[in-house]
Structures are given as structure tokens and as C-alpha cells.
Image (cartoon, rainbow, N blue to C red; front, side, top):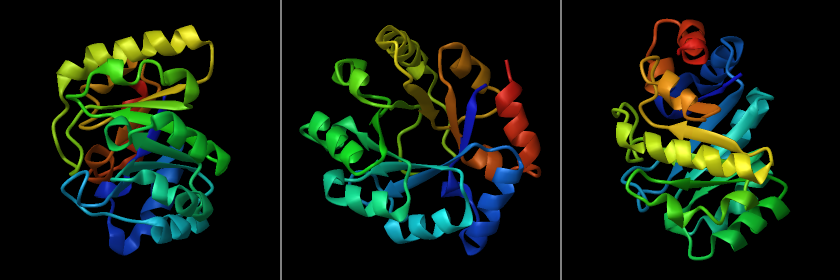
Length: 216
């Protein structure tokens, strides 16, 4: 069954603990936490202190997506705050293998991400080393953007490479995910769907999550 990871980027931050508990009750398995520094992407969001407080509110798997420059400087802070998985962007590091090892030594699972315009070849050799591959289906920075369908072949290619490793490596897609496109994403191999606006702007979190899980 596909894993649904609501992104708190679209949650009501004045009642964040309640929002997280609400999506947990609605069937979410992970919580996706977008970390932005205003440099790698044109937005600033949250840091380890907020992750630490989220950890106190839920036992769900905390999926921290670092859209920041020099992510290696913050690995221990996010690991200590309670992250279960830390994903870095290939574009943000010179030596991704070293940072991946850094994440694992800190006690977390490690992920590698690429933006829509980045070639899949930049991560092909890295995939056997990680626990998750993240294909961005929007240009990161803000929620509410439309899904970029041109990334679908990249999702399929990532799935094929993952299958050849014979390891459990999650394939995550993030950006503009709705009930209308979740089916094609899943058909091409994605097993973790990140959704922000579609869930948190809906009238029923449970209905939204169910639609993502069951859409064909």
C-alpha cells in the first residue's frame, strides 16, 4: 500500500500539533517536513526546534526534506530533534556519498532528491546507498503549485533502478500531488506520496488521504 506523507507546509501553524494529530487519525503514515533556508529555495520555513516539538506530538515517521545549502552542517541537529529520515538535494552538495554516510552515522535513514530540471543521471550511482529517492514534481519553495507531468518518465526510471538493487528503497514524489495525478505516479513506481495543499486545504483530511491511497 502506498504511504501518504502530508507536508506540513500547508498546515495551520497556529495549531500545528492538532493538525499533525488530525492527519494521523485520518490515515497518514508519515509526516513530511519541508526545511527551507531562503537560499537554496526562495522561502524560509522551519528548523530543528520545530521538529523537536513535532516529535513530542506524534510517533509517526518524521521525513525531513532539507532544501538548504550546506545541509551537512545540520544533520546532527535534525537527528537529535527526532527526524527518522533526512533527505538532501543532489544539487546542494559536492560529495553526496559523504553526506549520506553522515546521515546514517547520525542514526537516520538517508534520502536523495532532485528538482524537476535535474537529470536523473546525477543520482543513478547514488541510489544503492540511500533509503529513499525523492523526485520533485514542482520547483520547490512554495505549496499549491501544479504537478509537472514531464517528470513521470524520471519516476519510472528511478523505479526501475531501485528494483535492480533488490533493496528496500522508497520512491517518493513531492509536488502538486492530487487525486487526479496520484494514480499515474503510483503506476510508475512511486510508493510514498507527499501532499500539502490537497490534504490540508481539503474539507476532510480522511477523505483526501483515502483518495490518494485508492486513486487509479
